[in-house]
Image 1 (tube, rainbow, N blue to C red):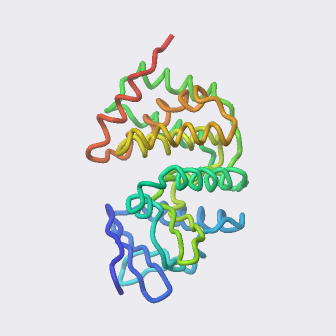
Image 2: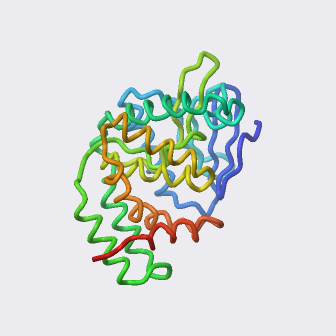
Image 3: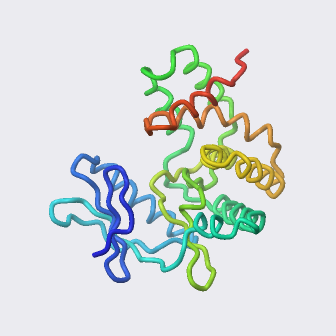
Length: 247
């Protein structure tokens, strides 16, 4: 088996036509099973995603197996062909809107998940800001659109025929599409502010969404991502939490 990627507490292998995601012994079993269940529920929508093949224990470690997709990530393609970034961004947003047009009613609700995450930030965000974040989140409209939760070009594989395949559904929920767009904006902004602005302009134009509406989600989404404690992201995310002018 060939190692494709190494992540925190995960190793991803290729074994012929199958990809095997292997989790460390520390990774919660419930999270592994939930990821597989999310994937299966999204697969039932008919979206272009690799087919789930098995959830099993191999050499004492839990694994999730799915089809291997031969191709390049959209991130790689954008880096190799910067002159056509606008075209790729349009394709990227069209694919995200296709995702958000789907329903997966058995997935967890996005607002419930974010409320839990904000509540867990006791050591990172003070009680006053947490209260205001909960209040703002509760005031936002509750929708039931399919939200990927980590929609970015590295999670889209373009196969050799030019067809897209969306991977990594571990964070999938049902909720407000603009919250998912806010998450994508922050992911772009971590590395390329100009791409982030291009993305937000494109998403709002194609979805007929006011930019200010997506921006209202940014502090909430940034706060909910702080729970991951990813090195190098904390200061960036806190800066977005702190830009809120609370009344």
